[in-house]
Image (cartoon, rainbow, N blue to C red; front, side, top):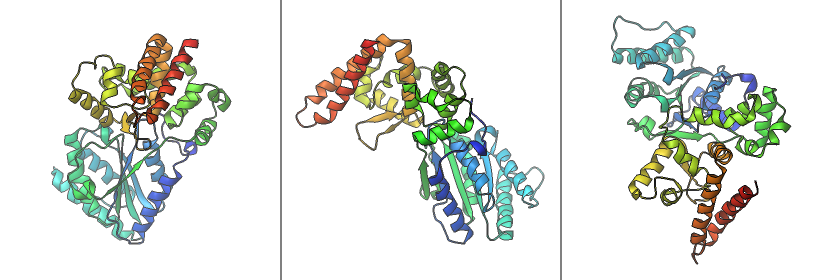
Length: 370
C-alpha cells in the first residue's frame, strides 16, 4: 500500500531538514546540545518514514546515519544487533561475547559507538527509530533503557523518533524532559502538484478537477494514490481499509459520522453519533481521548472551537458516507445545523457559531439538489 522511499520522488520538508542539519552541524563542532531527542509526529501517510530515510541519505556525509524500523524487529536484542552490524560497515569491529545479557549488549553498543565517534571527531551519530506507535510498551521500555538513554549519554548522538502519536510514558529525563517535537503538516497544493508530476502517471489537471480529491490532497500517501490509482473512486475504500486495519472496527461508524463536523467535543459526540445519546460524559470523554491517542484527532489550536479529525481522513470518510448513504449524510448535517442554531442564539458567544450554522446549512442544501 505504501511506496518504498525513493530519493527522486521526495518533495518538501525543507524546514525540518534544515532544523536537523543545523543540530548535526552543532554537534559536529562540539557545541553541547541538551535536547537531543527529536520526536517526528504526524498522522498515517504524512511522510514520517520518508523524512527519516531522506535525512539518513542527505546527511550521510556529515554524520553516521542509521534508520531502524522498530516494528519490524522482534526484540531489543535484535535491534542492538542490527545497529552493531551497521557499526561494522563503518569499520568498527564490534565487541562480542557468548550468551551476553541485555545489559552487556547495551554496554558494548555504547563502547563501540564511543570508539566510532572518537575515531571521527568531526562527525556525529544520527539514529532514526521509526514506528514507536506500533511497538508494545514493554518493548519500548527496553528500547528506552538499553538503547536510547545509554546512547544519549554520548554527547554527539542525536535521536530522531518517528510515530503517529506520543502516548508512551517515557521515564528518563533525557527523553521525557529534554526533547523537541516536529509535527509534520500537510503539503500545500504546489508541493502536492510537484509530487504528482514527479510520479508522472496521471495528469495534475485530472486530479484537480475532482473537488473532494483536491481537498483531501496534501498527504504524500494520498497524493501518490491520486497519481497512480487506476480508478480514483476506489481511493476512499483503500484509505479507510488501511487506516482501520489495526484499529477497533467499531470506531469506523463513529468516526464516519463525526466526519461531517469541522469541530467536535464531548457534547457534540453525544448529539451526532448513534449510540452515544445516552452515554455518560465520562464515556464520551474517553472516546475523545482514544481518538487523540490513536492519532486520529487533535485539539484545534487555531480557532479553538473543539477537536478536529485528521483532515485528509475526514474528507475521505465524509466523501464515502455521502456517496454510500446520502440520506444519512444530509440528516447529520441537518442535525448539526439545528444544534449550532441553538448555540448561535447565545447573546454573548453566538457570533462565533454562526459560521458553523452557515456551513452545515450549505452542505444540507447542496445534498438536497443532488
